[in-house]
Image (cartoon, rainbow, N blue to C red; front, side, top):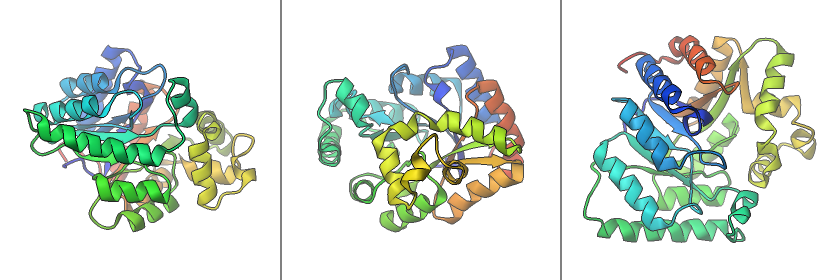
Length: 297
């Protein structure tokens, strides 16, 4: 897909005021970023609804779910929804799916004890459904897994089109590319903030990270990467904060994006902090030239 090397991930695409979301999507498209990404969590719109809002407001930019929760809809609904958007907006929709997190899944009344097996069976069921659909997307909408640890990355390689890791430093991108091999799409998320004062930058970063450091999937992945218990405690050590959130001037932040690309990423979804759509556009405008983002590219 023609999504370029840099896209934008923002939580307010899924829960902000619709008019503001549409205006922001158009502004980011005009800057030349290649894709718009957003998540699915309590308090957000249903992900296919958000995709419709973003796709209908824009003309060229791709839209990716990051991620659609497999426990929210069955495989039939997921496959049909992705195929419909792939058909309606050729080459502009990416389906990122994931197993979410035990606290959120258990709250919905599901059993999270075997998430890898659940994802594998879900992908098989999606394939079976897709073969029976009377409509077809051309080209097919890529399926990416929210894969962090090696076994889920292997599943992304074997049964999907790639991976969309979230809350990861460049060293994870190295690991992910090694497991995925050369073919599958690798599109990590990277939080950024244009702030050169260390105290303020880390304050913004810790505010962003607080909720994620309460979720075992993210914490266990960081421990697997070599961070210690002391790094993930008390809001995160400076070492961890600096690894997860790229902060500083334009060139320093751009260097982090290039680090992911040099490590094997095909595309990096940058998440501007703090969470404000107008502020996001301001930061993205400043970053665009350093990232090689140009209108029409």
